[in-house]
Amino acid sequence: MILFRNIRLLHPAQNLDRRADLLIDSGVIRSIGEDLAPPDGAEVRDASAWVAAPGFFDMHVHLREPGATHKENIRTGCASAANGGFTGVCAMPNTTPATDSVEVVQSILWKSRGLPVDVLPSAATTKGRKGEGLAPMGELHETGVRLFTDDGDCVESSEVMRRAFEYASMFDGAVISQHCEDHTMTRGFAMNEGATSTRLGLAGYPSVAEELIIARDIMIANFCGGRPYHVSHMSTGGGVDLVRRAKAGGRTNITCEVTPHHFVLTDEAVAAYDTNAKMNPPLRTPADVEAILEGFRDGTIDVIATDHAPHALAEKEVEFQNAPNGIIGLETSIGLSCTHLVHAGVVSLGRLVELMAINPRAILSQPIPAIEEGAAANLTIFAPDEEWTVDTAKFKTMSLNTPFNGWTLKGKPVAIANNGSVVWSEL
Ligand SMILES: [Zn+2]
Image (tube, rainbow, N blue to C red; front, side):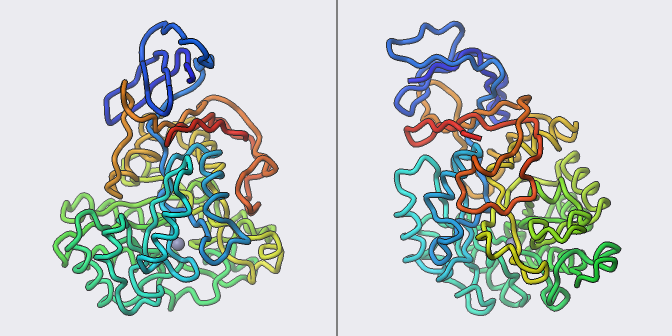
């Protein structure tokens, strides 16, 4: 039993923004009110610097299980999520074997049972993520899968994408998502194509290779009757523009996510050949970052997702062009988002809750946790004004591949409550 004294309750979908005492007992929000008397045995915490929001949900996470458990597993990935302030994650399907069958989905669900973080597996759009035959979406949908993506790779064939949209239309809430990359234009890339790649002599991934696929998929989704379509880890200004225009046109049920590293860093971070600045899509230009911030300001961007992509140290400690793509993100997402979006005046704290808790759940047809007496406690508690220094020694993820170690951030996860547990962040 924990009594949070004078906490700010912030839930934009409930029009809730007020201070109160909050009593959590056995996984349930027992009482909300002024000057609550602590029941016998209750732990009482001064929470006047903290916010309680519906549990944050990261809809783009690589848990690496099955197949690459030397990088991460479901248990450590969920511990990392809890430490970073998330109560739910959507697991990406580029596992080995690929998450394209009921058996793999069931094994992921089985291994995540009883954890304080909910795991919603996504599934591959195509069998084996090969971009050809479609995965058995009906059976997968029955296990609870809502997001279909070949993430890590792009479904290159327009014909296969058309069939995927048509097939998905048979299942309530099924969303097709895409890792947007025209692979014919990006072979052997190490970073964004631009002035920096020329200077460093590294092969580039031009922004147009991402934008071409976004544009094409919007057209196919519209052609198929306005099917739901979600753009993964969007990184370019042109992409923001395409999504903005599609939304303004009103015919497309389109949503998009952006990672913290794509709104905080630019391709200049590659200059020191730090392999923790190597990811797919690559870090882009200052103009792209500015356009993304504008996309946050005007509501074009729906979701912040981390693309948490653990790799073992030895895998990243190689020549830049040979290093695998991706960085971890679960334990820095709240800090980076508070610092670079909220405190920078780009979005309000309420909008942050929409971007990190409400919108990802809505896109994936997951219930939005309520903040009211009697509701199951599914909460993220964070300190938006607390300064802290990122220290990977305190991370729960198995991997250390982050460019943010040693950074000072303003905004820190405090705890999560979910599935009957309260987990305090140890960052
Ligand atoms: Zn991807």
